Length: 246
Image 1 (cartoon, rainbow, N blue to C red):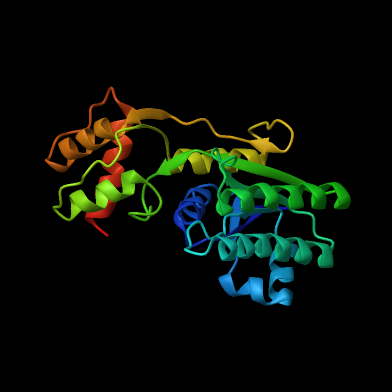
Image 2 (image 1 turned 45 degrees about the vertical axis):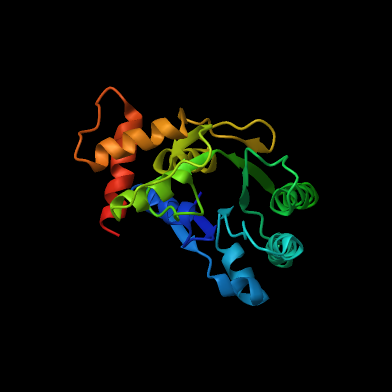
């Protein structure tokens, strides 16, 4: 057993990747290794990356693109290249593949997640490796990309800029704070959280309507203090504070 568990992260500059690195940095037994984007175009570089890792959290993906076929192919090629690198080096890190609780939806993005999962399952079975698909709920927190990652990020950006957010659909949303999500991912890696088969879905912490979410953020943006009896408000306050300084 190495002195530190070496966690490789693809998509390390994204929303989850940045927060995962920060969370891991609080634990001396963990060492994170960011995979550069260009490594997926250079087999030798990607091979060195996978060979250096005890676990690989595969977050790199295109989630939106006007051309659905292009999106699907990019995401599948990322998985194929990762598998090719592990096969070439006989590396068997624990691969954690980021998917979504909405994986069954009929879109090219969700199809790439389902099919990518099947490829990694086959790799693990054929090579004695280990693969866990992470079915992730909607997350919010620092580094979320407005108008992209979540409605919470969008509202926070608009409020921090003095704008008035608009509700398009007042539906219930299930949420988890990003730091809690990252702690759950680390828990799977270090064995503190048991998984069922090769799938793990962290439970959402909150369920609120979009109108309630906005009302709480507007209260905080106007200078209101987070309600100590409402954990959601504490996490929303931390998120809003981030956008006010970035």
